[in-house]
Length: 370
Ligand SMILES: *Cc1c(COP(=O)(O)O)cnc(C)c1O
Image (cartoon, rainbow, N blue to C red; front, side, top):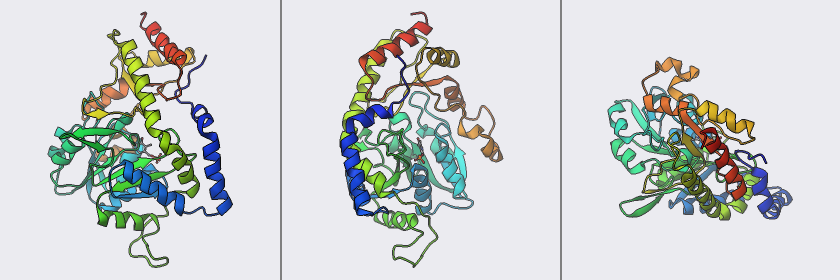
């Protein structure tokens, strides 16, 4: 039996009636732009994130872009971030006219190394973007301290509902930064049936700015204080997401169970490094990402056995052709570069059966002759 990397149909089958009913309510009301489902979802995601404000937008990339704009980042500014992330993090910095400054990662968590942030700060630094990669929060309190008063954006596209204990208190993904950003891309843990995104903040002024930015810089129709964007969350997407949200915690727990099952099954394989989750963190395992020196051969072996896997990410952002103008060369972020050659993400979605997990395990162990 083939095991895909992700099976969205399996999840849809478990919630179909609720989702279809929620969609039809919006269709029957013919109220597609913002409105009740969006406002209600904003309230629910703000509560989940333990912050007063949430603002829906068109996608997770726009969420970063609007967050940067709300913080006043623009032409000539610098933004410090990780090079080991989905392209959107760096692309949004470029698209507001600022310069991405890439600092290396902690090789165990794949998240930005807090100790490298302070040395990268210059007079032009206007923001730091930490990314909560693969479902595990970055060391947000350490990044914030290292930022020395420069605002921090937390790109939590892969980590909605993840948490981290800081000084005995549970901090939710998105909560510990000036602005946290989420994506509802279908493959995220809370995925819509199309694109969607959201920003969360505890700051009233930033909330006002984000609300304005998503509707062409206006809060009063046809009066524009700044030039913003058309970046709204669709009511249809919000309706789907509201139907799915009550399941998020259970799905994330199932991913953690699957991850623990793999961890135990791979424990004796010296050629495989299983994911490292910091003791303070509760991961939502958007990905279960192993490291191995024989990554490409392992992936080919899995493919031949009908098992899905993927490489997130094969080329670090500081080495992307579009960022050649920044002047980075190989060796400047060695841990990110090494990770990009060794990582492989395996199926970890909540609906996996024990039989499917065992198939993945047998295929991985078979490759290493164990
Ligand atoms: C998915 C993702 C984004 C972008 O989200 P979209 O909704 O696809 O625009 C940004 N950052 C990270 C880390 C992501 O994984």
